[in-house]
Length: 194
Image (tube, rainbow, N blue to C red; front, side, top):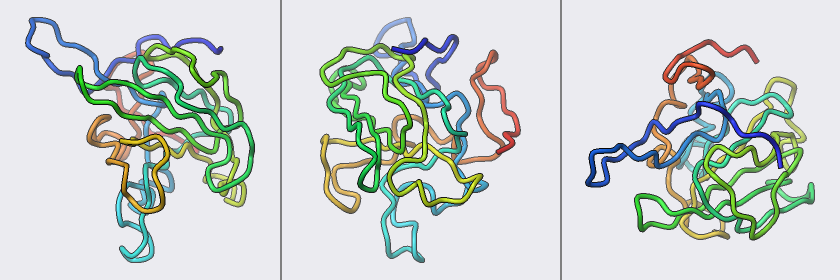
Protein backbone atom coordinates (compact mmCIF):
# COMPACT_ATOMS: atom_id res chain seq x y z
CA UNK A 1 0.00 0.00 0.00
CA UNK A 2 1.15 3.57 -0.65
CA UNK A 3 2.13 6.18 1.88
CA UNK A 4 -0.22 8.19 4.07
CA UNK A 5 -0.87 11.88 3.61
CA UNK A 6 0.33 14.01 6.49
CA UNK A 7 -1.83 16.78 7.81
CA UNK A 8 -5.03 15.97 5.94
CA UNK A 9 -7.85 16.82 8.30
CA UNK A 10 -11.58 16.95 7.86
CA UNK A 11 -13.33 20.19 7.11
CA UNK A 12 -16.54 18.53 8.14
CA UNK A 13 -16.29 17.95 11.86
CA UNK A 14 -18.92 17.24 14.45
CA UNK A 15 -18.82 17.74 18.20
CA UNK A 16 -20.46 14.33 18.70
CA UNK A 17 -21.53 15.28 22.22
CA UNK A 18 -18.07 15.73 23.71
CA UNK A 19 -15.45 18.40 24.21
CA UNK A 20 -13.39 17.07 21.30
CA UNK A 21 -14.12 17.75 17.67
CA UNK A 22 -14.07 14.44 15.77
CA UNK A 23 -12.89 14.30 12.16
CA UNK A 24 -15.56 12.61 10.07
CA UNK A 25 -14.13 12.57 6.55
CA UNK A 26 -11.12 13.91 4.67
CA UNK A 27 -10.87 14.83 1.03
CA UNK A 28 -10.02 12.17 -1.56
CA UNK A 29 -7.33 14.41 -3.10
CA UNK A 30 -4.84 16.88 -1.66
CA UNK A 31 -6.03 19.60 -4.04
CA UNK A 32 -9.80 19.79 -4.47
CA UNK A 33 -11.25 21.47 -7.55
CA UNK A 34 -14.02 20.54 -9.97
CA UNK A 35 -12.49 19.92 -13.40
CA UNK A 36 -12.80 22.16 -16.43
CA UNK A 37 -12.59 25.42 -14.45
CA UNK A 38 -15.29 24.35 -11.98
CA UNK A 39 -17.78 23.61 -14.75
CA UNK A 40 -21.15 22.74 -13.12
CA UNK A 41 -21.53 19.83 -15.61
CA UNK A 42 -18.87 18.06 -13.52
CA UNK A 43 -20.77 18.31 -10.24
CA UNK A 44 -23.52 16.09 -8.77
CA UNK A 45 -27.12 16.06 -9.95
CA UNK A 46 -29.15 16.66 -13.09
CA UNK A 47 -26.42 18.89 -14.50
CA UNK A 48 -25.68 17.56 -17.97
CA UNK A 49 -27.43 18.16 -21.31
CA UNK A 50 -29.32 21.22 -20.06
CA UNK A 51 -30.49 19.45 -16.91
CA UNK A 52 -31.81 16.31 -18.60
CA UNK A 53 -28.94 13.94 -17.74
CA UNK A 54 -27.55 12.96 -14.34
CA UNK A 55 -23.96 13.09 -13.21
CA UNK A 56 -23.52 10.83 -10.18
CA UNK A 57 -20.58 12.48 -8.44
CA UNK A 58 -17.83 15.05 -8.72
CA UNK A 59 -15.12 15.11 -11.37
CA UNK A 60 -12.10 16.48 -9.53
CA UNK A 61 -9.10 17.84 -11.47
CA UNK A 62 -6.07 15.63 -11.02
CA UNK A 63 -3.02 15.04 -13.14
CA UNK A 64 -2.39 11.42 -14.06
CA UNK A 65 -0.97 9.38 -11.16
CA UNK A 66 -2.06 11.80 -8.43
CA UNK A 67 -2.48 9.98 -5.06
CA UNK A 68 -6.04 9.34 -3.87
CA UNK A 69 -6.82 8.90 -0.17
CA UNK A 70 -9.30 7.05 2.02
CA UNK A 71 -11.76 9.68 3.23
CA UNK A 72 -12.51 7.71 6.42
CA UNK A 73 -11.59 4.58 8.35
CA UNK A 74 -13.34 1.65 6.71
CA UNK A 75 -13.24 -1.53 4.67
CA UNK A 76 -12.69 -1.87 0.94
CA UNK A 77 -16.05 -3.12 -0.33
CA UNK A 78 -14.76 -3.92 -3.82
CA UNK A 79 -12.11 -3.03 -6.37
CA UNK A 80 -12.31 -3.28 -10.12
CA UNK A 81 -8.88 -3.77 -11.68
CA UNK A 82 -10.04 -3.89 -15.31
CA UNK A 83 -9.99 -0.89 -17.59
CA UNK A 84 -13.41 -1.55 -19.15
CA UNK A 85 -16.78 0.10 -18.72
CA UNK A 86 -17.53 3.74 -17.97
CA UNK A 87 -15.63 3.86 -14.68
CA UNK A 88 -12.48 1.90 -15.58
CA UNK A 89 -10.35 0.95 -12.58
CA UNK A 90 -12.24 1.69 -9.37
CA UNK A 91 -12.32 1.41 -5.57
CA UNK A 92 -15.36 1.38 -3.29
CA UNK A 93 -14.72 2.12 0.41
CA UNK A 94 -17.39 1.26 2.99
CA UNK A 95 -17.34 3.53 6.05
CA UNK A 96 -19.51 4.69 8.94
CA UNK A 97 -20.29 8.40 9.16
CA UNK A 98 -21.38 10.19 12.31
CA UNK A 99 -21.38 7.00 14.37
CA UNK A 100 -24.25 5.15 12.69
CA UNK A 101 -24.71 5.88 8.96
CA UNK A 102 -23.05 3.58 6.41
CA UNK A 103 -21.83 5.13 3.17
CA UNK A 104 -19.57 4.09 0.30
CA UNK A 105 -16.88 6.35 -1.16
CA UNK A 106 -16.40 5.48 -4.81
CA UNK A 107 -13.24 6.39 -6.77
CA UNK A 108 -13.10 5.87 -10.57
CA UNK A 109 -10.82 6.22 -13.63
CA UNK A 110 -7.80 5.10 -11.57
CA UNK A 111 -4.42 4.05 -12.98
CA UNK A 112 -3.23 2.10 -9.91
CA UNK A 113 -5.01 0.41 -7.01
CA UNK A 114 -3.09 -0.24 -3.77
CA UNK A 115 -5.85 -2.00 -1.81
CA UNK A 116 -7.89 -5.19 -2.10
CA UNK A 117 -11.45 -6.22 -1.32
CA UNK A 118 -11.99 -6.71 2.43
CA UNK A 119 -8.90 -4.75 3.43
CA UNK A 120 -9.20 -2.35 6.38
CA UNK A 121 -7.91 1.16 5.69
CA UNK A 122 -7.50 4.26 7.80
CA UNK A 123 -8.49 7.82 7.03
CA UNK A 124 -5.76 9.45 4.95
CA UNK A 125 -4.21 6.19 3.67
CA UNK A 126 -3.12 6.41 0.04
CA UNK A 127 -5.27 3.81 -1.72
CA UNK A 128 -4.47 4.40 -5.39
CA UNK A 129 -3.52 6.80 -8.16
CA UNK A 130 -5.67 8.78 -10.56
CA UNK A 131 -5.71 7.75 -14.18
CA UNK A 132 -7.67 7.96 -17.40
CA UNK A 133 -9.35 4.56 -17.50
CA UNK A 134 -12.91 3.82 -18.59
CA UNK A 135 -14.67 6.58 -20.50
CA UNK A 136 -12.04 9.09 -19.30
CA UNK A 137 -9.60 7.57 -21.81
CA UNK A 138 -11.28 9.58 -24.58
CA UNK A 139 -10.88 12.97 -22.92
CA UNK A 140 -8.44 15.56 -24.28
CA UNK A 141 -5.27 16.50 -22.42
CA UNK A 142 -5.97 18.75 -19.44
CA UNK A 143 -9.24 17.00 -18.58
CA UNK A 144 -7.69 14.30 -16.39
CA UNK A 145 -9.71 13.76 -13.22
CA UNK A 146 -10.89 11.58 -10.38
CA UNK A 147 -14.57 10.67 -10.57
CA UNK A 148 -15.71 10.61 -6.91
CA UNK A 149 -19.09 9.58 -5.53
CA UNK A 150 -20.75 9.10 -2.16
CA UNK A 151 -23.12 6.14 -2.31
CA UNK A 152 -25.71 4.74 0.06
CA UNK A 153 -25.43 1.26 -1.52
CA UNK A 154 -22.33 -0.26 -3.10
CA UNK A 155 -23.73 -0.93 -6.60
CA UNK A 156 -26.41 1.64 -7.52
CA UNK A 157 -27.89 1.65 -11.01
CA UNK A 158 -28.10 4.48 -13.50
CA UNK A 159 -29.34 7.89 -12.42
CA UNK A 160 -28.95 9.40 -8.96
CA UNK A 161 -30.58 6.65 -6.89
CA UNK A 162 -28.31 5.17 -4.21
CA UNK A 163 -26.11 8.28 -4.19
CA UNK A 164 -25.87 11.60 -2.38
CA UNK A 165 -23.97 14.70 -3.32
CA UNK A 166 -20.37 14.57 -2.05
CA UNK A 167 -21.05 18.06 -0.69
CA UNK A 168 -23.19 16.49 2.06
CA UNK A 169 -20.19 14.75 3.65
CA UNK A 170 -17.08 16.40 2.19
CA UNK A 171 -18.37 19.98 2.12
CA UNK A 172 -18.66 22.58 -0.64
CA UNK A 173 -15.02 23.72 -0.86
CA UNK A 174 -14.33 21.86 -4.16
CA UNK A 175 -17.16 23.73 -5.83
CA UNK A 176 -15.41 27.08 -5.73
CA UNK A 177 -12.29 28.27 -7.47
CA UNK A 178 -9.41 28.60 -6.72
CA UNK A 179 -8.61 25.06 -5.65
CA UNK A 180 -8.63 23.99 -2.02
CA UNK A 181 -5.23 22.62 -0.96
CA UNK A 182 -4.46 20.74 2.25
CA UNK A 183 -0.71 20.85 1.67
CA UNK A 184 0.95 22.14 4.80
CA UNK A 185 -1.64 24.64 5.98
CA UNK A 186 -5.24 23.52 6.46
CA UNK A 187 -7.55 25.84 4.62
CA UNK A 188 -4.93 27.37 2.34
CA UNK A 189 -6.29 28.17 -1.08
CA UNK A 190 -4.16 28.20 -4.18
CA UNK A 191 -4.58 28.42 -7.89
CA UNK A 192 -4.02 25.01 -9.44
CA UNK A 193 -2.46 24.93 -12.88
CA UNK A 194 -3.60 21.97 -14.96
